[in-house]
Image (cartoon, rainbow, N blue to C red; front, side, top):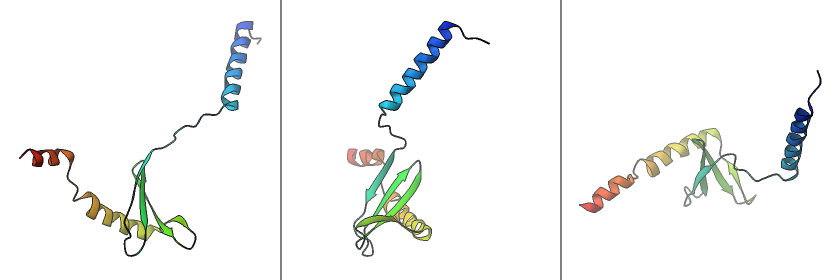
Length: 102
């Protein structure tokens, strides 16, 4: 089966477009996340990030001068503490507005 000139030109145009994209890659966001840094808790600095609903907990290791992931058990404990101490007691913006209006 032979291709028409128009089909070949279209293929060449598509290849040129792909080549340009490969030559000039763009910085693209693949996932968004939010996060918090915490005051020292039990003498350790923690930070929590969340991406696509998944919590990620890290602690700062002074010896290495870097953030490292906490183990699974500590992650569950920290997440429970976070939900109890930081989320459960937080008032919704509407509740704050109603309290202000009184």
